[in-house]
Image (tube, helix red, strand yellow):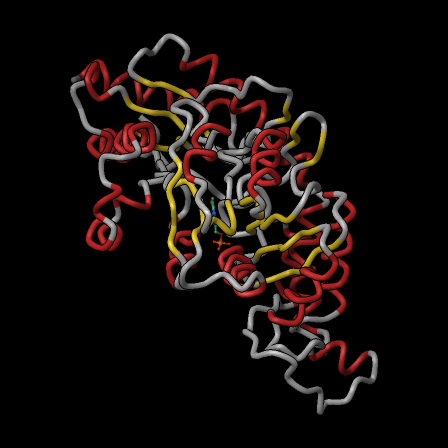
Length: 384
Ligand SMILES: *Cc1c(COP(=O)(O)O)cnc(C)c1O
């Protein structure tokens, strides 16, 4: 058994990254400033979109987006229930109604068929998730949105460096990335709102800082009056330069990080291939590049005679950490209480919600670590 605990995720932060953060702290400007501008510019260039706005989190980006689009009571927003709960929380807090689209059992993504089934006259927006680092099938999803006249915003929290048919994810329309510590790059906490819609970008930039239209740095640098006025009541979701400098440095390493993730994932697939109780995800059947945000598997609870939580507990006893991405949103306490009508209506989502967990995967892991995980899995299955 492993001597030290293997976490399921760990950010890759170098001594040089730490020094760069120290340099910002020692400078006279630590909140939104030159490092934000530089991070946004390099992000825009990397993705190939029209523009980017750095924020405190992806959840903040979703909040601002719903506000900017004027989504509220009487509107419907389509999302998978197999997503991070922040999306559903933001929809509900806006006053709109979440409508849950079921997913493909083995890619965990909404399909054109499941999306179209959810469309009504009240649909304003759909939020597909690029799950685990593979891309959703954008061509048919966008075709459906055009046909029915609603907007698509891509949840790209898992998809930094992912490509769909040769096109970088985040380039096509409007998307929201996350830099939470488990994501492919981190700023501590943070998010990036990317879009090709200049008007929307301007709105988000304004809403992220009190609705002033300028932030403190704009005001100092460009000599804008400190008396700048509120154009629309806004929020306080601007990223600090302490975070942004980390983002600049991490983004420069994303391809290296992702290629390490890719080779670890390939090793997992090979080592797990003979174990029938452990069911990895399948690749989509269109051309794509995987960024391997997560290595997700499902436990065959019938064959193994154990439930998922027990299995995660057994791995923990053997010093192997795991994650859960995700327990379906509609099966969480609040949503079961308030929207119990969804329970039982999303068979593929529910099938996965009961069986899913994530194995350790991060750039600084070794092949030996992967073998330790697989060894522990085999041992647990043999014992039961
Ligand atoms: C992490 C995550 C988010 C939220 O990101 P934050 O930056 O933590 O707000 C949203 N959606 C998905 C699918 C995620 O994994």
